[in-house]
Amino acid sequence: MAWGNVVPSGNLNDVEACVTERGYEAEIPTCATAESTSSALFSTVGSRRSQAMKGKTANDDFEGIVGASVSLREVLDLVRMVALTDSTALIEGETGTGKELIARAIHNVSSRCGRPFVKLNCSAIPFDLLESELFGHEKGAFTGAVAQKIGRFEMADTGTLFLDEIGDLPLALQPKLLRVLQEQEFERLGSGRTHRIDVRLVAATHRDLTEMVARKEFRSDLYYRLNVFPVVLPPLRERREDIPQLASHFVEMFARRMGKRIDRIPQDILDAFVSYSWPGNVRELQNLIERAVIRSNYGVLPNPLPDKNPVTVTPSQDTFTGSTRALILRALSATGWVIGGPGGAAARLRLKRTTLIAKMKKLGISRPVRKDDINPLSENRKSEQWWQATTE
Image (cartoon, rainbow, N blue to C red; front, top):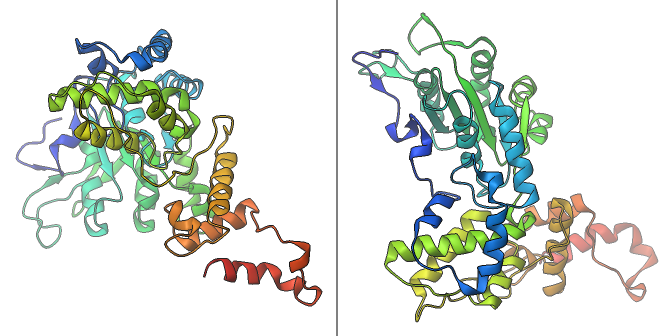
């Protein structure tokens, strides 16, 4: 497409002709980078690394994705399925699970690979500028519009547009996005000319869009149009078998970057990694290992986990609901069922007090009451009194 004398939208780093040529380290770096180092692998994780590499064939088509767990392979199978089509994909998962990486994988193994991959974080653009970022504008369309501007949809023509944090898209813009998805056409701000495009949309969110639809915070018709092919990413705590391989990869990457030599990861630290809850998922693991490499001495990786005993779950707790319930119960038990305050369960779980209370109610978690504490006259009010007492 010839753009002429126009101003492209935003940061040109958000437009990539073929993302397989670019390293990506924001959430999960590449296996290829790890394999290129000439240093020996760590003796303490050798057997686990060897086992993981045997299953690496599951990732042959996905440069940049580290791991061989069953849950990750299931996600990659879904990626292969939807990549063969031009259907809209909705990637759901917690923060730090690698949603953008999966969006890139969908583009890379599709027939659109080699064409533009354009990304936009809907939560990072002010509302007043978001419409212009998406659809572009003409010169003089509004105060400050001193030149014509190409929007992200037009930049992604014949390629893929990735809209991250789609749950933060303002309600006022949702009908316009729905029209583009349905009709593959739009108008720039300040123009009556309709532009036809051929764009494959991939959206991602860490929010529960079904709950947002129920609260009238997200249009139901747009949700159904986005949710053509959902891909749900597991949190790191549900793919613990990938943690040793991820940890060794991050150590190699940061050690090489900082000019350090790390000979081994102590087994007790590796075990702590596997049992830790990782609320920040892979991004938290990457950041903590970077800190540990900075602090390392004598070729041994120190423990980067918090000094206070972290809240952990056992590998057998393999469902999101079960893991969440176990985390909350363990934190409550450790704090004597105190929710609020600096030493309460909410602070221990890094949650707001009100958020923890809401989760406890949703999961049916209540404080055990001893028979000696039951007052028949106040039994009907014990639930309300307990919520007030434990939050003080």
